[in-house]
Length: 140
Image 1 (cartoon, rainbow, N blue to C red):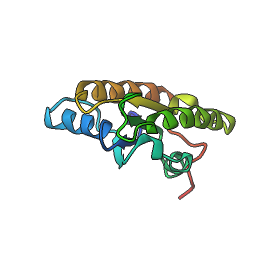
Image 2: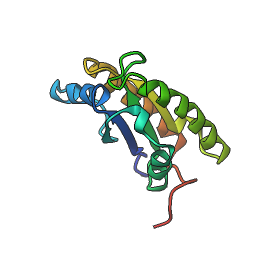
Image 3: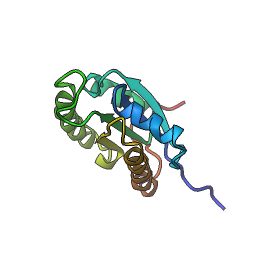
Image 4: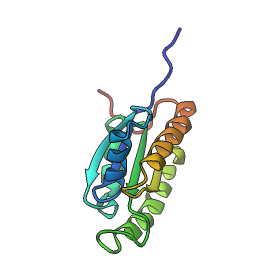
């Protein structure tokens, strides 16, 4: 019997909020799928579209960018820049033939460990029916 597909997710997490929310979920021993490779960034606004494309090229089945709630950014407007950039990236990914569901943005505060776990669970459940991402994956 074939093994069930388990998606690999690269998550760019804002240091001040989303990464702290992820840490809270971990230290609180909340259960969620171990499919995420977290990458801490100073701000969601600092995530370049090139980082996202690179994650897909290196084998990610899904990419998540998560930052502070709008209006609560440590760098004042960083998450507004991220939100604008993310909308453009989604369009570019669709243009090159990648399913838009493979890329998500979320807002998670340091106190929202439970919300972080739900986002990961939902993202994994969204990616499983899509199967492995092969459009951008670099050949080994």
